[in-house]
Length: 265
Image 1 (cartoon, one colour):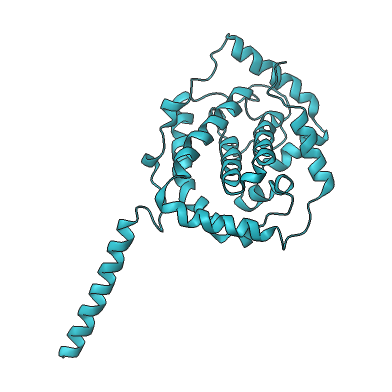
Image 2 (image 1 turned 90 degrees about the vertical axis):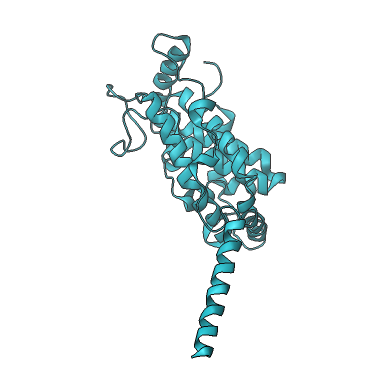
């Protein structure tokens, strides 16, 4: 009986010690709370108001980009509308020079699994604050993707841009020698939402800022450093094992980067 009590006590002590260790490491092994991130309602400027010069610019860009329907830029935008983590990571393959495979980066996946709920909550808060109408609402203009699952009045800021540019910022941090082309691809990813006709130009610009403010905190979060260091090793290892990138896809991305939609009309 004494041996059973001693064994039970030992198990309790071991479990309790492990629990204390987990608590002492911040958010280790768990998702990051939204309260850890900057409040986008404070960070982002308000969207353009009707009748303003900024809204007129948004209107002009939306109208002009409807002419891209059926083009290679339109097809790239259709592809960029896919937001699952594996596809999003693979979208940066041309930027780094080899195919990126999330299955070979479990720690990178772990990082995004831990931060995604907080990013979504903070982004949703500011979307609900401004309740901005999407550009296609009330028109018969084409969009490059289905709009059935899009909130018609949740345009500002662009959540896709937040996710895509957020991925770019993480990859640029882990592969600094590739930062230029990676961040360029992140910009193009955001501009694809303008091409699609599901976001205004100013929504996308706000998405870049939204991602930057969030990642400025997340990339320095102590409990995420182990995942980030391991993810860096995973990404570098892929350079020696993964197949080359598709030349035609890379050319389409370069063309899109060379013809930015953010330039003055």
